[in-house]
Length: 499
Image (cartoon, rainbow, N blue to C red; front, side, top):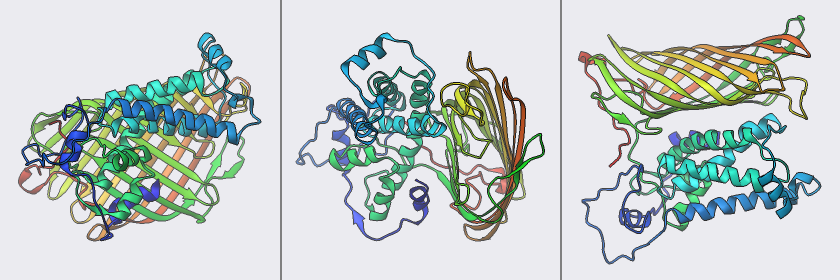
């Protein structure tokens, strides 16, 4: 996935694919040739349409319904073949009846399955609906239905409440972000693109690619103001220290390769008071460190609904309700959450080529997992529960010079009833980038993490770690998409709109 995201910047092969025409797209999304509620469109409806071309009538609600069933059946068949000795794979009509009649539980699956595997499965359900022309909220219903189908009929064990929550909510957020990146790679107006872009897009949203080529089917997204940053460098890990004074290597010393990409779409940059739809603004950061102690960090936040505003000529912002899905495998300090809550993003022109960007979020956690514990229930080795989280992120942009950034993420999780204990995980960072030429930068970043946990069997737990990273990066916009600071005016930038 990281490779595919990075290819947004470098996929420039001259070999071309013939994408569906505007007329094909316009008639294939629904039998009435109308844009479904909530879909966004870049098709010029005033352009002449070749009426001699055969009309492709597709029931846009039918295709994802069939595909959700196919995805469900594929996973059931794969599990039965790959894990035929495991009792939970033996799905029968009897096991389905038991699940319909029996209670829902908090399952004991491991951290990766619960917090990454299920959201990815949910993203497949979501992209089936989204790429068939349905809106974000319509597609969310398909994820919830697909997850319910899986919990009742996907495994021969009691249905899992936490999986239903995580698959539905995190799967929809994950799926929308991947679908929008997929759309940026493929192109917005049916234009020809390099074959490299199509190859890179397929693993991000395979169902969307299938619908695109087989059914000539896609949601119509307008051109976006996507800002991206990629980097490659070396991570120098500190160590984790607990209250006994023992030390454990975190990421090795100079032996870790660090790769990453961050994407931001729709950051406040237009004047006026505008309504924003789901994910018209989103921010995604993905990072990977390997090989000694592989680490994956995935942090996603997206606006669900809100407004842009401009309190002063030199300040503009975005306020609303945000959804977030975070996943980090940092040893002992790992955390993953699905949350929704209020937030504010601001862009302040400070003059003299300096702009300050900031984001503040606070949200209750529907379901989260954190820490590393001695299993208190079944085989689970992490704390599972609900709680709250917060984010503060600041970036000072120095035109033609670089940037300085800092921020902190905090997560508090209280174990479910019957499994007492708490986890408080905090991540902080400070970094700077120096622009060399064009979009090429050299960067340095210091990260630190802390954990304060309580467990009825182990008592109080305390851990801390640090990381120092040197990297080379490339940014798509040397000023990170900020408003112009010349004369205090705002640079107009496009964003997806409902048509």
